[in-house]
Length: 158
Image 1 (tube, rainbow, N blue to C red):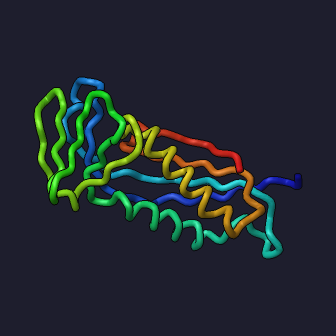
Image 2 (tube, rainbow, N blue to C red):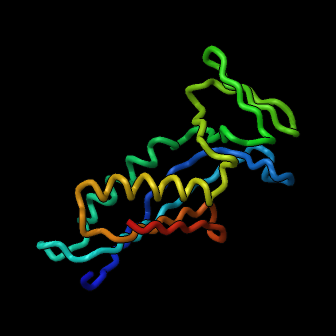
């Protein structure tokens, strides 16, 4: 393996609502303006880059579109019950029952919609997308910040 170089992009954002069933104030429906930073490690290609910044930003923007301005719900929670019928999604929590138009909801195959789980999904999707066309990439880091003081960082090796 040759010398590894890292490139980083930030400033990719999306807004979404969620709740976490751990109790406390996060169990209430609330939202975040999530900020994503991605760091890609690899060897330089013949053009002297790991990946074109524009390509990386494009992939991140596409991934963010899947969740932007939606309510993110966990499919595997033992504490949150999600039921879709017709065009309505009902969500039962210990705090009560919510009902949303299904077009405003994204159900994710996770236990909770934590920053850690969301970052893991984004990192995995980004790695899969990038390694199709960039065999020089060896590691992908995704940082998902839900506030200026709270963030999750996931690293995946190719």
